[in-house]
Length: 431
Image (cartoon, rainbow, N blue to C red; front, side, top):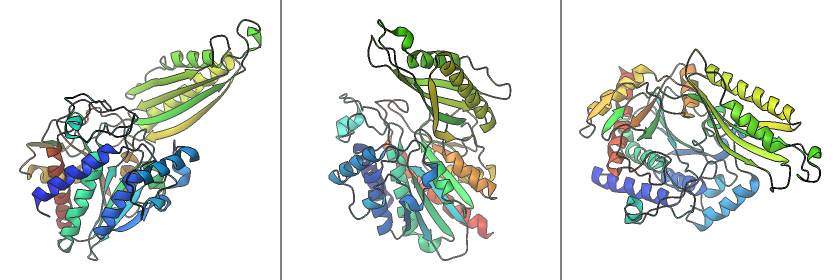
């Protein structure tokens, strides 16, 4: 496919996915379309529970929500030949092209999920102007995963077109539920990267300037996402307040004290209580309360320290107000350090690109958290090389913002650079 045609196709895919955002473990429409295209390109497909461990799916929606979304996907353009692979909410795909020639196994990760954000309808919002804004209220691709999915399909297109010139195996991993750091762990537990020599995860934006490239983004913090519940006893606040066991006060006490967790001398820590929901009426002692909390740390060890402190505080708050409590881990990510040898190869590819103006091997700037780090750790522990690269782009607003949008000119150079990395890794392997 000529580059001009591929560029148009990338934009078309991106805009289609943008209109139909699906959140974690519900990417059924998206996955069915992705699978259909990959199948047509000649990739061997593994899908659904074949590439995801049920025991490691954190924060997965319940059966009713999953079934309702399956019905929605059927009514909104899902590919009916493939959607049943994903109907239970296991929406991962691993597409493999085996050249039948000796060479490395190279894997690329692309995430597919959207966010619970209502997209701007402002007249100066580009998706509004061009008619591809989200059709789903309070759901939006506000982090660029629609672009990532399109880039994965673009890379698949180039690989299929030039497969006679390649060696080894190319694996394209389309991951659900990156938001909340939930999806990668289940795919790693299903051994989808156990044979991988080189692993590359990709993101666009994240504050990197347009036409710039970072071959190894090492700034990710380890993280845990916690759903915490308190259960007390309801009572009339005026008539029998002494009979109540106040879950709201337990949750409030926990929230305030969580922010007092001491910092760790070995590295950076973060803590946030993002949501608190409690009670059922102004004259009722609250018998239930829920918190949504996240911890972060420079390393998994430091993050575990913060997580342990949170559990101690929650336990103490529950005891103070004679309530029960439950803590569920609904997402986790690791810290990471990209393999410099692999990052150097990617850097060379970017420097040879006529579009990318500036490239660097690595950055250690703080970059939030990412569960692609599970893939990276698994590959590196098996003796392979792994990195997380970022393609800079112009952003209309920051990630996770209702006005988020990218410069679509970023798509083709990103795909071309990733394809060139396959070529260079083939050459390196065969030297």
